[in-house]
Length: 303
Length: 184
Image (cartoon, rainbow over all chains, first blue to last red; front, side):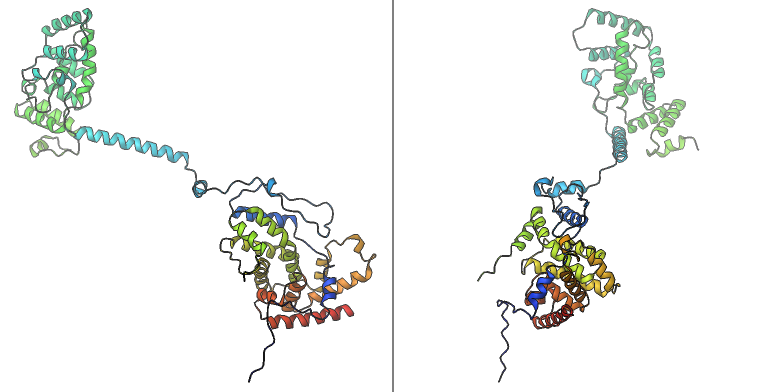
């Protein structure tokens, strides 16, 4: 046996409570306070900010007279709002990203340059020697022992492949005359030239006929030909001088440390102790990390 | 049978999709009733401003997960009511009767309704206002939702998290007190 519950249908309208109509009518006449314009602006700004829309700066309408019932500052119409389209995810992320400081860019660039220069120097000192342009100019003559004069001729030819002018022929004749005078000035010129540290010993060693007769298959030492060019010693031959100056740096980077060590060992074997020791010292200064054979290590001066 | 579509819920969904104008329309419609509900419950204009702003902030923050399962106004008042309960629990001293009356009476009244023009009405409203302030919190909330928002018993129950019969009882008690105050 059960007691039926009272109907509880939400759809049915609520019955009015006793006296509710009178109280409600009086309540509607109570002052109807509204939020202030600052509050309106703050809420609307928050709503716009949540959408990523930049609203215009908070526009607060200052009231001069007391507020009246039903008087409130309406939000600005949409047309008055300079609302942008909602930015995409990418652009929002880009906007959030902090700009990179300028000093960081400069530091990064400098570090990159130092790294590249260091790598280039390292590759240059460790890579096998590449054939020289002078050798490609006269590969067949490498078999024979080139004299200083022939080397100078080749240098002139390589540097000036264009048809010979009368001036160059005159200059060649003059350089030939100078070549006949002596080979010693060439050595002096080689010593006076300011090549990179490993090059100076190489230039001296190139005077040795054994070195000049190295087989062409190996990294060729055409440096003697270039450095023995009589151009510096022959003032009346400006074309040769120009050629020698241009060719010298090109051959400077050909000699590898291993070759240099081999030549130093040869100098020791030939009894040229002073020259060999000097070159060994230069080599050790230029390549302090290069492992030296024990016999060469022993010849280094003790620190 | 399809439930009738709540236009406010549609506006809220539009705002969630990025339509700022929809929010502006929604705000314009509900700002006054929400503000008065909070003001008459708290009787403190400064705290009313804080809770009003906090209520709307929560609406904004919840836009993405808003599901129109109830009327928007019910949901909005639910948020406000929860904040109100928390605020009342913090036991901050509320304005006493005289101070609250003064705060509420600062609201400008149209000149034709000033006491010298309509003395009896003014007195009756004053009595009503004071009687509402002196109601217990639950009864005051229920009567304000009823009078200000004109909510049904079910809606008041939903907002306050109470049963329908409890709401009905609170309303009866509140109405009796108000009528007594007006008859004095």
